[in-house]
Image (cartoon, rainbow over all chains, first blue to last red; front, side, top):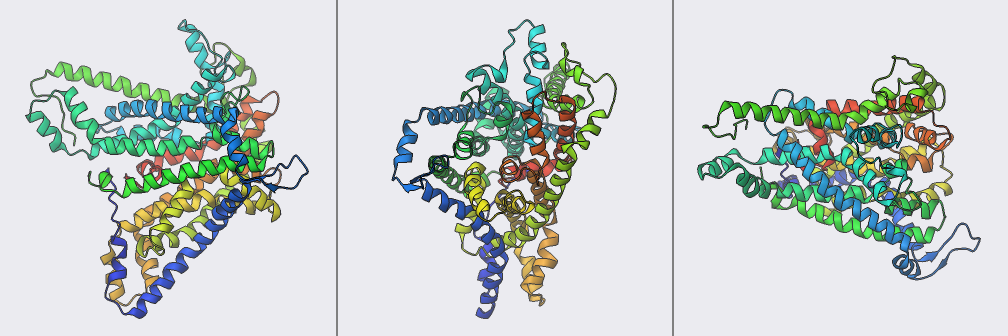
Amino acid sequence: MKIRKIKPNMNNTLLETPIQPLYWDAKRKLAFAMISPAFIILLFLAIGPMFFMFVNAFRTWKLAVPTPPRFCGFKNFLNLFRDARFGNAFFNTLFLMVSGIIVQSILGLGIALLLKKPFKLRPVIMALILIPVLIAPVVTGLNWKLIFNDTFGPLNYILGSLGFKEPLWISSNRFWGLFSILIVDTWQWTPFVALVLLAGLEGIPNQVYEAADVDGAKPIMVFFKVTLPLLRPMFVLIVLLRTIFIFKIFDPVWILTQGGPGTATETLSLLTYDTGLKYLDIGYAMAMGVLQIIFMIILANIFLKFTTSSKISSQR
Amino acid sequence: MGKAILKVGESSKKRVLLSIVRWVLILLVLLLFLFPVYWIISGSFKTISEFYNRPPSLAPHKLMFDNFKSALSGRGSKGLIDSAIIGVTVTILTMIISVPASYSIARYSPGGQHISFFILSILFLPPVIGVIPLFFIFKTLKLLDTYYVLFLSYMFFNLPFCIWIMKGFFEDIPVELEQAAMVDGHSRFKVFFKIAIPLARAGIAVASLFAFIFSWNELMFASIFGRNNVQTLPLALQDYIGSTGIAWGELSALATIAAIPGILLAIFMQRYIVRGLTFGAVKG
């Protein structure tokens, strides 16, 4: 595996070929004709809703109340900052994000190191551990609902026979609920993290290790002083991608706990969903949406800058 | 690459021990990641009483297919058929629209970086943000609970994803190849069909498989835009959970069916999954 090299200016080579100006027009036409169907659909699916969102974020519009929507300025946003439930959802999402990234990076690095040396069965093992990534999230949720079952599930049986306390997992309290979701997310995404780090490990040229060996470095020192620093771009990539994905986590939480008990494990996506489609408080839900969009646009910018910068592409 | 980092002076005994430890750990990892999958598959062969055993029965008592039969005679078959219809149609539509778009961005970049950024940022949006406004838009258009609404709304994540992934594959094709063909008198359109598409076929295959699996696995859009006329497999599964006295055997059987495409894809597409899910940042 090698790391993708992005060549920002290569695309324009055709543009700069000394062909007649007449061609340039034909090319431009063709380029726009090819992209326009996709662009129009995305405009409808993304810009339309975005417009709807920015308009209604500044309006009070509750479908449960028969008064027509009216402009209310920043009231929705001000309410958001005082809303304990929003704070709770924000904290839960943040907790899942931080703990998920830390746990998955450490476990993923361990697995990547285990698989670093090529062997005959390695591709098979890599394929098998990728199953959790691609399996339908609904199925994942169901799997774990059976496993977490407090009396008949295999997990508590094992814990019980080892003499541990048997927790109630998803139906107990905030800590165990969030912990269960963390376990499921870790199960689902650690293999992916591991394979990204494995790609990073394979991208480190052998000469680096040889040089360290010549200098008489101990394996532990090589790991901390050579391997980890060289893996930095991969860790940045993982942090970015996991942040994006955990930020929009919905399906596993929805299947496992529905945000419960109460609002104990509610995440931002779940709260937005409930506010908009259950309590029908459209204005308020859209204000939440606007905050999430701003956050995501910042992240998308960082991602694009990062992947097109020389940092990740210089490492081959 | 495969050069052992172990020093020459170290005894072979230590090396054997290390290799044993390594294999034990690898098997442990496999066990941890595959057990839940095994659990749902084995559950689909269990009778309902076996779900309420302690200790839990590790393997079904006998291989029986009653669960599959009853799952597929109920709402399961509707779910399976709808998921297949939607998955295949969405994949075909997505590819027809995204292949030219992706090529256009990779080669000519009309609109500069802005279009790429627009497309990427849609991919990063939490779907719940799009869902609420779209619900009202589709309601006004009287499209709710039809197949069309899912064909269209699944483009929300499939189009940006496929464009972005295939863009990388198209960029990998040397421009000189296409220029040579143009010098030979082929039109740009012909170059696209005769040279670019065949050379990027791996990328096109990968993107279409991802498009299929995304629409096959999707729950949120299906649960809001569909309901009675259109019921995909994840939606059917979700309805099982909501009902009282869950028929765990039936549910597991249906979940096993729903899991099959994901499992197959993981096994046959392993090389490309990392590239796909890092949005092309890591090349497999």
